[in-house]
Image (cartoon, rainbow, N blue to C red):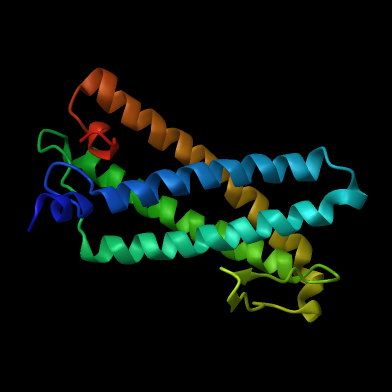
Length: 189
Protein backbone atom coordinates (compact mmCIF):
# COMPACT_ATOMS: atom_id res chain seq x y z
CA UNK A 1 0.00 0.00 0.00
CA UNK A 2 1.34 3.45 -0.84
CA UNK A 3 1.88 6.20 1.70
CA UNK A 4 -1.27 8.09 0.65
CA UNK A 5 -3.43 4.97 0.98
CA UNK A 6 -2.00 4.12 4.37
CA UNK A 7 -2.95 7.53 5.77
CA UNK A 8 -6.56 7.18 4.62
CA UNK A 9 -7.14 4.03 6.67
CA UNK A 10 -6.77 3.63 10.42
CA UNK A 11 -3.40 2.36 11.53
CA UNK A 12 -2.08 0.75 14.70
CA UNK A 13 -0.98 4.11 16.15
CA UNK A 14 -3.48 6.64 14.75
CA UNK A 15 -6.83 7.14 13.09
CA UNK A 16 -6.72 7.52 9.31
CA UNK A 17 -7.61 10.73 7.52
CA UNK A 18 -11.11 9.55 6.60
CA UNK A 19 -11.96 8.68 10.22
CA UNK A 20 -10.51 12.01 11.36
CA UNK A 21 -12.60 13.89 8.80
CA UNK A 22 -15.74 12.06 9.92
CA UNK A 23 -14.91 12.70 13.59
CA UNK A 24 -14.16 16.42 13.36
CA UNK A 25 -16.92 17.20 10.86
CA UNK A 26 -19.42 15.36 13.09
CA UNK A 27 -18.17 17.23 16.15
CA UNK A 28 -18.46 20.65 14.52
CA UNK A 29 -21.90 19.97 13.06
CA UNK A 30 -23.28 18.47 16.28
CA UNK A 31 -22.05 21.38 18.38
CA UNK A 32 -23.50 23.78 15.80
CA UNK A 33 -26.87 21.97 15.79
CA UNK A 34 -27.16 21.93 19.59
CA UNK A 35 -26.29 25.63 19.81
CA UNK A 36 -28.47 26.58 16.86
CA UNK A 37 -31.34 24.47 18.19
CA UNK A 38 -31.17 26.22 21.55
CA UNK A 39 -30.96 29.64 19.86
CA UNK A 40 -33.88 29.03 17.50
CA UNK A 41 -36.18 27.74 20.25
CA UNK A 42 -35.29 30.36 22.86
CA UNK A 43 -34.39 33.58 21.06
CA UNK A 44 -36.10 33.62 17.67
CA UNK A 45 -39.64 34.98 17.62
CA UNK A 46 -42.13 32.17 17.16
CA UNK A 47 -43.44 33.54 13.84
CA UNK A 48 -39.96 33.41 12.30
CA UNK A 49 -38.87 29.97 13.48
CA UNK A 50 -39.98 27.79 10.58
CA UNK A 51 -37.06 28.74 8.32
CA UNK A 52 -34.67 27.98 11.18
CA UNK A 53 -36.32 24.61 11.83
CA UNK A 54 -35.93 23.88 8.12
CA UNK A 55 -32.19 24.64 8.17
CA UNK A 56 -31.71 22.76 11.45
CA UNK A 57 -33.53 19.72 10.02
CA UNK A 58 -31.60 19.67 6.75
CA UNK A 59 -28.26 19.84 8.53
CA UNK A 60 -29.51 17.13 10.91
CA UNK A 61 -30.29 14.82 7.97
CA UNK A 62 -26.79 15.36 6.59
CA UNK A 63 -25.34 14.59 10.04
CA UNK A 64 -27.36 11.36 10.16
CA UNK A 65 -25.95 10.39 6.77
CA UNK A 66 -22.46 11.30 7.98
CA UNK A 67 -22.88 9.12 11.08
CA UNK A 68 -24.02 6.17 8.94
CA UNK A 69 -21.01 6.63 6.64
CA UNK A 70 -18.78 6.93 9.68
CA UNK A 71 -20.03 3.64 11.12
CA UNK A 72 -19.70 1.91 7.74
CA UNK A 73 -16.12 3.16 7.44
CA UNK A 74 -15.35 2.01 10.97
CA UNK A 75 -16.74 -1.45 10.25
CA UNK A 76 -13.95 -1.95 7.68
CA UNK A 77 -11.29 0.08 9.49
CA UNK A 78 -10.88 -1.05 13.10
CA UNK A 79 -10.03 1.58 15.68
CA UNK A 80 -6.39 1.87 16.70
CA UNK A 81 -5.89 0.02 19.98
CA UNK A 82 -5.79 2.05 23.17
CA UNK A 83 -2.44 2.15 25.01
CA UNK A 84 -1.70 -1.20 26.65
CA UNK A 85 -0.86 0.49 29.97
CA UNK A 86 -4.44 1.66 30.44
CA UNK A 87 -6.32 -0.33 33.08
CA UNK A 88 -8.99 -2.66 31.73
CA UNK A 89 -11.79 -0.60 33.32
CA UNK A 90 -10.56 2.52 31.50
CA UNK A 91 -10.47 0.75 28.13
CA UNK A 92 -13.93 -0.70 28.75
CA UNK A 93 -15.25 2.73 29.74
CA UNK A 94 -13.74 4.33 26.63
CA UNK A 95 -15.33 1.71 24.35
CA UNK A 96 -18.69 2.03 26.08
CA UNK A 97 -18.57 5.83 25.84
CA UNK A 98 -17.77 5.71 22.12
CA UNK A 99 -20.69 3.41 21.39
CA UNK A 100 -22.96 5.51 23.61
CA UNK A 101 -21.97 8.55 21.53
CA UNK A 102 -23.09 6.69 18.39
CA UNK A 103 -26.36 5.58 19.98
CA UNK A 104 -27.11 9.12 21.16
CA UNK A 105 -26.26 10.59 17.76
CA UNK A 106 -28.82 8.24 16.22
CA UNK A 107 -31.46 8.91 18.90
CA UNK A 108 -31.05 12.67 18.52
CA UNK A 109 -31.18 12.43 14.72
CA UNK A 110 -34.16 10.10 14.49
CA UNK A 111 -36.18 11.97 17.14
CA UNK A 112 -35.42 15.25 15.36
CA UNK A 113 -36.51 13.71 12.07
CA UNK A 114 -39.79 12.67 13.69
CA UNK A 115 -40.30 16.18 15.07
CA UNK A 116 -39.75 17.62 11.57
CA UNK A 117 -42.40 15.23 10.23
CA UNK A 118 -45.03 16.30 12.77
CA UNK A 119 -45.16 20.00 11.96
CA UNK A 120 -48.54 21.12 10.61
CA UNK A 121 -46.66 21.39 7.32
CA UNK A 122 -43.96 18.66 7.52
CA UNK A 123 -40.48 19.79 6.58
CA UNK A 124 -39.55 18.65 3.10
CA UNK A 125 -35.97 18.26 1.92
CA UNK A 126 -33.76 16.51 -0.58
CA UNK A 127 -30.21 15.45 0.11
CA UNK A 128 -27.73 16.74 -2.46
CA UNK A 129 -30.72 18.05 -4.41
CA UNK A 130 -31.45 14.49 -5.59
CA UNK A 131 -32.64 12.20 -2.82
CA UNK A 132 -35.93 13.16 -1.17
CA UNK A 133 -35.95 12.67 2.58
CA UNK A 134 -38.82 10.29 3.35
CA UNK A 135 -41.17 10.88 6.25
CA UNK A 136 -40.85 8.53 9.22
CA UNK A 137 -44.21 9.55 10.66
CA UNK A 138 -47.16 11.58 9.42
CA UNK A 139 -49.73 14.01 10.76
CA UNK A 140 -51.58 11.15 12.48
CA UNK A 141 -48.66 11.02 14.94
CA UNK A 142 -48.97 14.71 15.87
CA UNK A 143 -50.34 13.75 19.30
CA UNK A 144 -46.89 12.29 20.07
CA UNK A 145 -45.09 15.47 19.06
CA UNK A 146 -44.43 16.60 22.65
CA UNK A 147 -42.86 13.25 23.51
CA UNK A 148 -40.76 13.37 20.33
CA UNK A 149 -39.63 16.93 21.10
CA UNK A 150 -38.79 15.99 24.69
CA UNK A 151 -36.80 12.98 23.50
CA UNK A 152 -34.94 15.15 20.99
CA UNK A 153 -34.23 17.86 23.56
CA UNK A 154 -33.11 15.59 26.41
CA UNK A 155 -31.03 13.29 24.21
CA UNK A 156 -29.37 16.37 22.61
CA UNK A 157 -28.28 17.65 26.01
CA UNK A 158 -27.16 14.19 27.15
CA UNK A 159 -25.15 13.92 23.92
CA UNK A 160 -23.64 17.35 24.58
CA UNK A 161 -22.70 16.25 28.11
CA UNK A 162 -21.10 13.04 26.84
CA UNK A 163 -19.19 15.02 24.19
CA UNK A 164 -17.86 17.25 26.99
CA UNK A 165 -16.77 14.18 28.99
CA UNK A 166 -15.19 12.72 25.82
CA UNK A 167 -13.24 15.94 25.22
CA UNK A 168 -12.19 16.15 28.88
CA UNK A 169 -10.96 12.55 28.78
CA UNK A 170 -8.94 13.25 25.62
CA UNK A 171 -7.38 16.31 27.27
CA UNK A 172 -6.65 14.25 30.40
CA UNK A 173 -4.82 11.70 28.28
CA UNK A 174 -2.85 14.45 26.55
CA UNK A 175 -1.88 16.65 29.49
CA UNK A 176 -1.81 14.28 32.46
CA UNK A 177 -1.33 10.75 31.13
CA UNK A 178 0.86 11.96 28.23
CA UNK A 179 0.07 8.81 26.30
CA UNK A 180 -0.74 10.09 22.80
CA UNK A 181 -4.45 9.20 22.75
CA UNK A 182 -5.41 12.71 21.67
CA UNK A 183 -2.63 12.94 19.06
CA UNK A 184 -4.08 9.86 17.31
CA UNK A 185 -7.04 12.02 16.22
CA UNK A 186 -4.93 15.08 15.35
CA UNK A 187 -4.20 15.95 11.73
CA UNK A 188 -0.41 16.09 11.91
CA UNK A 189 -0.06 12.43 12.86
